[in-house]
Figure (tube, rainbow, N blue to C red):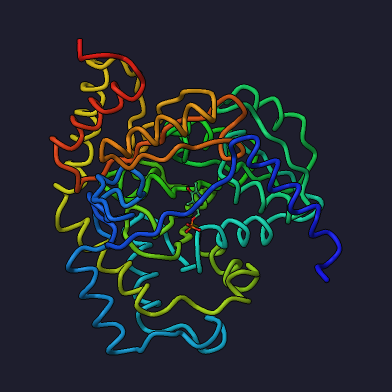
Amino acid sequence: MAPAGRDALARGLDALARDGLVRARRVLDSPQGPVVREGGADLVNFASNDYLGLASHARIRAAAVAAIERFGFGAGASPLVVGHSRLHEEAETAFARFAGAPRALLFPSGYAANLGILTALADRSAEIFADRLNHACLNDGALLSRAAFRRYPHRNVGALEAMLGATRAATRIIATDAVFSMDGDIAPVAELLALAERHDAWLLLDDAHGIGVLGEGRGTPAHFGLRSPRVIHMATLGKALGGYGAFVAGDATVIEWLLQRARPYVFSTALPPAAAAVALEAMRLVEEHPARVATLLERIGEFHRACARHGIETSSPTAIQPVVVGDPARAVAVSARLRELGQLVPAIRPPTVPEGGARLRVSLSAAHTREQVLALAAALGEALGHGAAR
Ligand SMILES: *Cc1c(COP(=O)(O)O)cnc(C)c1O
């Protein structure tokens, strides 16, 4: 007999199907790259967060293989027991220098890092202030910490200031995506840091989509020229840096506290040493080849100009280019039409984006050619029924 509650799950799945919200996974038969193979077709890949084309870069592969030869695959234990290898140690030192912070710590993933930071710094007596469009894992970390959780309207510094003015909590944390994952816009980081100073708060910057892209690849704090012991800089490795895991960089005291107390750090097996080696190699590639980041910025500009010719509005300054259509079914239909045209562009639906905000989410990469980007804009124009270029 099936467990009690199974029928409720089946009804829940039916409801998702009715609302057009069922998600299915694509099975890839190729590495990540500007073109991927899926379902027997070669598709131009505008769906990946591999913004610099590093995920299957020859030097990244070689770094992983060399690390496996030297250290094997599994880390074997938590970092605090015996899982912290020379490669993990070197990667942390390199990231602190790369990002311009005193110290860094290597977490199992960005999701784990945000849970770890928020639960280690905040408890019931704390207050967390969060942008309404933050990534799910910042929200989950805030809820798990049991702190009071206040969400301010997107990028609204005035509303945040009013909230900070009213708080009595001793520990205050402002938490924000540095680059918003579904919109591609950048948080007003300088203003947020000024508020953090004035109201004695931490500023947690989730730089999943800024690292490798902004500040010549060093991330959003470098983009704004900011250094402060209040800033906790969380940078995932699974996106532009082509690997897996996440760094948290900041003041040496806060990093030591996280090492001692962040539960996903303490209670998870350390990343495979090869993941640390990949992070090291990705940082070297970004430093040795600044043209790679510059190419991404060129592709963004080319996409904006081509979209304008096809009557499509775009304004994001980063690799994430949303084309909002509103209705989830329409987003899915446009995505399906693009696939017929050889373009892989995901439809993003609630709850990942707010109700009424369903969209195509185009991710650009330095590995795309100019021609691929222009062809995408033309295909989008057709799929959206905007007719020929003006
Ligand atoms: C992807 C993402 C994360 C999670 O990072 P992982 O390393 O993939 O767990 C966190 N925050 C934002 C904004 C993201 O887009």
